[in-house]
Length: 559
Image: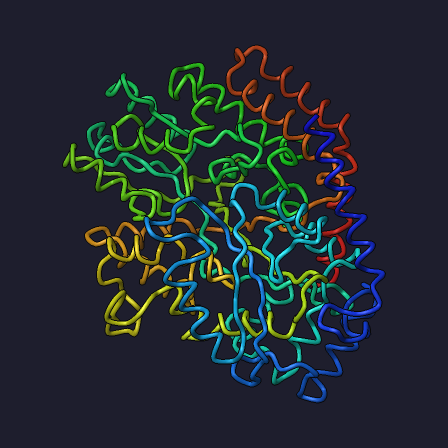
């Protein structure tokens, strides 16, 4: 039944997009010449002409034009975390946005979408014609396909002129902006720039390490020795907790990079690392990673019911603060992040000698190199559907987010109330507790053009973020350092069309076999792995790898 609903939704998306593509006018009332209704040659001439003239047809730099009481709609993620008296669409900061946008004749109304349902809601809203004027999506192929099918605007005519969207372009930068551009120059989406690409950390109980008289592990073998000692000294705790990809949404973790055989070649990694299922199909080293996990499981070095806890995001937090886990991998800065509950502080309130630190990734078993897994330089994509009534106003709003009064204030708040500048000019939190309930709960979701916050550089990001964890500043700095040390491998952004088409089937197979690989008896591991690969082959994995290879062949040919 779920599969039928998914197919129906995708069919409706295609039907609606094609019908929108046939409209004779753009949403803002202009004729179709600059609308991006064709993916071939639509963007390049407009971009070239705008840059050569130094001016654009549309005025999209905030303050350059006064609009006539225009209303735009903007998608915002709802995480069900609004403080009492506020909602995600009606709060102190949405009021501030309208206060500033009203100065140029624009009113902003927000459309709430549950964060966990982002992709499905995006497809359904596009299909039903109810999409907001500014939409958000993290899946590159989906956003680009909307444009290719004629359902969204080419934003090049609104952005590329020298006098257009100045603040937006200055903040995002050309390297990030071009990620939303096709080979003809059409700008099908605005790629939100990450302030840092740091992704994850391996964390370890430093006090348990000292107790065992061991050093920080730098190799897989040393890590195994540490885990054995942890279990011996703390038999009631779990020595390890590593991501084993039992949820469809889980990516492969940084620890797995220590086992990959093909990781030295960046292009090969881009082809093979589209998802954890891609890696199990293409890189024999990923199978070795699971064989190692299987050893940990069968030797009692991890939670015997870990696969149940993966459905519970609070399980790891509970194990952390209750001294139940010795070494694990999670989001960067997980141990002291105030938004995750300042877990180390909570642990030390009951166990003052406890200490949890991050460590650099362990060396690859094949070449001895430290490889680190990072996010791509962009996060979400912003795009404007053909149902939007005024693209010029929507882009002007995105441009305002690039200003100090815009995105900077939404993220950092007001000087004297939320932050003060240090001697280097870095905004530093005054009261982290106050900020958490006043603005931090929504700041990331309102600052659409950036991920991880409004910062000029990764160093500024780390310095400012450290101030949000009073007493644990050095932990924060070490976390981001360890998350970016070594040879970086960035998460690929391309999604193969066949993977999108077969995603439901692949997810079911993947979740089933990733658990089987970890929990089966060691003598059945190899057979289970081959059975897994055969299942993937039957669902179309050769086509997926072919599509990924063709795509990255073209990407690297243009480098």
